[in-house]
Structures are given as C-alpha cells and as structure tokens.
Figure 1 (cartoon, rainbow, N blue to C red):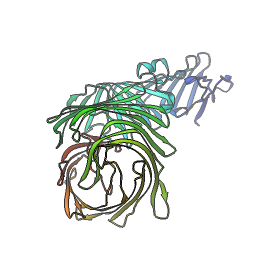
Figure 2 (cartoon, rainbow, N blue to C red; figure 1 turned 30 degrees about the vertical axis):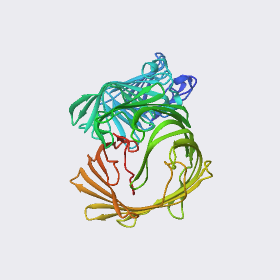
Figure 3 (spheres, one colour; figure 1 turned 135 degrees about the horizontal axis):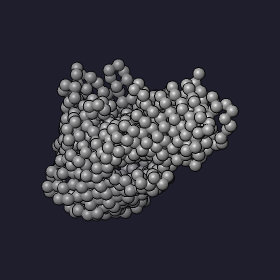
Figure 4 (cartoon, helix red, strand yellow; figure 1 turned 90 degrees about the horizontal axis):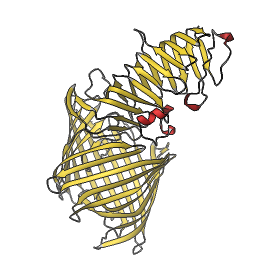
Amino acid sequence: MKKILSIGAFCVAAAMIALTVPFCSAWGNDQSRVILEAERVEYDQARGLALATGDVKISRDILRVYAPRVEYDANEQSAVAFASPEAPVVLLQGGQRLEGDRLDIDLQTGEGVLTRASGHFPAEKGKVYASGGDLETVRIGDERSTEWVKPGISSEQVQGGQIYKWNDTSMTTCPNTAHPHYNLVTKRLVVIPGYRVTASKPKIYVGGKYLMTYPFDYVIDLQKGERSQMAPVLVYESEKGVGLAYGSAFALGDMYARWKAWYWSKVDLEGAISLEYEASPWATLFAEADYTWNSDQQEKRFRPQWGANLSAGGWTGKIWWSQAESVSIEKELGDTFTGTLWRKPEIMIYSPWWADPATGGKFRLMAGWGEYETSATSGGSVTVRRTALGAAYSGSTQLGAIRPFWSYSYWWYDYDHLSKHQDRYDARFGIVWPLGPLTMTSTWIRRWVYGDSPMSWDDYSDSEALYQKMVIPFGTNWRLMARGGYDLDDHNLDEMVYRVTYDNNCCYQVDITYRDDRVGDDDWAGIRLLINAFPSNPFYLNDNRITEYGE
C-alpha cells in the first residue's frame, strides 16, 4: 500500500508515524502543502529523519519530484532524492521535465541542486533540450536569484516561480539529443520557465563539428519565440547592393533588447536598436532607433519610433509615434510606394478572430485613427488626420487533394484634408492542388477602390492580378519554388520569385529567396532561417519578404 505523508502549515503529532510525517514547510513564504507519497516510509522521530522508498513522489503546487528513494530531514526541512540503475530522479514543473542522478532541495527556500541533469522545457512548438552538468534552482525573488537574473522580473512572469541555472551544458531544439543537427555548448544556461532562456557566450556546433563561439549572450524569448542571430550572413537589395548583416538579442533585467547592423556595398553602414518593456500583462512598451538609408529622399538618417503594443482578451492594438519612418508598401503588383512617414501618433485596434459556424470561416473587426506627415499625391508634403474602420473574413476547406481558400476585407478611410474619403474592397480566392509530385497554388486577387487619399502611401487604385506558384521537391530535404505574378489589367508578367529551401525534417529550415521586379527596380535577395520549435518568429536576414498565399 502506498503511504501518503502530508506537509502542512503546522506539525502534527507522531502518533501515526506509519502514515504521516511532520513536514513543516513555508516554501516561498507561503504555507502551501507539500505531499510525499511512497510504498514504504521509515521515520526516526528522535532524529527527525524519514526514509521513503518505492515510487516516491513529492508534490507542491505544480512541482513534482519522482525518485526511487528519498531521505527527508524534518529539522533542516530538506530532502535528498536518489536515482537507481533502473530509474532517474525526475523533476516536473508545468511542461518542463528534468532528470538527474540526485536532487538536494531545501523545502523552505526552494533552493536545490540536480546532478548530471538533462531534460527539456516547452518552446512555441516542440521543446528545447538541454543536457550535461549540474542544475541549480531557486525561487524567483530570493537573494540568490539576483546572481542569475537582473532585478525586475516578477514571480507572476515565471511559471511555477522557480528559475534554473545549468553549468557546463549543451542546448538544442533537435529531438535527437544524442546526435543533434546543431547544439550550443555553454558554461552557464539560465532558464526562466515561460519567460526567457539565456546561454552565456555559447560555442556553436553543427553536425557535431565546432563552428564558432557566439560573442554575446544567446537569448530565447519564450513569450515571443524570438532568438538571437547566430552568425553574420550575406544579403542583397538592388538599391543598396550586397551587404553583410549581423545582430543579437540581449536582456536588460525585464527589458528585451535587440541590435542589428548592415554594411552595404553602395550605402555603407546601417544600424538599428530596439527595446521592449512589459509594463503590464496587457501592455508592452517599445522604442526603436534606426539609422538607415531611404532611396526616395536619397538620405541616411536616424528614424526613431516608440509606443505600446496592447493585448487583452483576444483584442490587440498598437499606438506608436515615428519620425522619418522609412516605409516600403506594395500597394499592388508592380506598384510599390517607398518614402518617409511621420506618425503623430497612429492608433490601431483589432478584435479577436470569431468563428463563423455557418461557413467554417472566421471574421474580425478593425479600427484606427492617426495623424500623418508624408508626401502628398499632388506633390510636396502634407499633414493629414485619418479615421479608419474595417472588417475581414477568411476561410478554407479541404476537398480531397484540393484545398480552396478565400478572404475578403473592407476598409473605410475618412480624411480631414479636402474632405476626402476612400472605400477599399479586397477579395482573394485560390486553390492549392497537386500536379504529380508538384504542389501548385493558384491565387486570384481583386481590389475595388472608390474615392482617393491625399497621401501617396495609402492612395489605392483598382487592380487585378493572378499568382501561380509551383513547388518542386528534390529528394527528402530540398525544394525549389517559383512564383509568377501576372497583372490582368496590363497583361504583363510583373514579378517572379524564386526560392530554394533546405529542410532537415527535424529542427530547422533554411530558405534562400530572390525576387525579380520586372516593372521597377525593387529586386532583392535574402535568407530566412526557421527553427521548427519557434515557427512564428523566423530569422529574416533582410527586411523584405513576400506575401504567402494559401499558407
């Protein structure tokens, strides 16, 4: 029979020693119950020592410890869990699972050490794996935790309230941890569950071979799925030439920061730095400063932005100010606006996506207001206030091997300049269909516009285009994609996009994309690195990207 031992806010008498051991714990300054279960318990009342053996389990809040054998000291309020040749010590906290040979833990403070540790913790999709070395854990806010993380991170931001520090460990997102496709080896890895992972200047290995030592702390933001860039890469833009890009994310207490630099053959050095601060569960403040070239103005200058991203109950929003923001907006196939924009400020609000049971699709509402300074459609510059209201609907279905998809959106814009307004309707319909081993995607896009705008960047016109994409697989890891954009109004092939993809079918994917603008001079090439554990936040090694239809 498994015996259950309860650790409450008070010590009970030892009259029923076979069932209840007097564990008194105020772990983390609360009186949460700690429960110990085992097949056999021996308790020495005089010495205050207990020995539990056989499927031992210790529980407190969302923390669970499993071990073949546990020794408990009631006087010191501490426990030692031991592995056996058949079973390790296992520590579970939320989606985190850790294993080791021995766990020493103080039940009052939460401090502990797990020797020869290995395990995993949740990513956006899949897991991050770590192994090797010893693992220490403390409660967030305790004195020792300030040695690992800077002050400012609250216990509400940390799942379970515990943080972990690994010494001399290896980290990867590859499930094959014995022979990972890549891994980072670091002397110190700090894991803040649900918040952030920081590896101190890790060495990077690819296929078991040393590649380089990362010169900064490598940061994974578990809330956003963002990671530091590992190495410099080559990029290309027709207006800037060939460039070398490199950047890094780093932590400043509870602020998240990123920097990036480019060196171009035509415009020399560009740089950017950004900061984010989670002011509340529903508001994240941000500030950015870019030093970049703008081809429209033929100048390089600082372009600051600041504001807040908002999120509550599925509703999202943004309020932000910008000065001389460099914008590139593809208003239609073959027509890309490039220029500068001042937001003074702009406010946007988006509802959640609501399901439509009748059609199987989903819809949302949008609204916005802003004051802008930018180039005017009539020439020169203009300052305009704009009010915007909109709605969007999208859906898809599966018909055997064919998947149709569709979307529709409407925007109503009202301007205080010359009493102008603009109605914009956008419709899209497409199908994804097989052609032997090829995957084909055909997309028809139509826009209707009534009225006009006094500003060049959002002055739209009627358009109609057809996109045809073809994906050709090569072996099990390689794919070639080609996509053409045909203007149905001008009867002209305005755009071609080519992409080569390597997918290791395990933990990462690399895309090399080239866009040929057959109307203007907006050619570019770039690289995208997608870590499968963080699909929502791939690395783009330039700021250009194509709109994907049907995905």
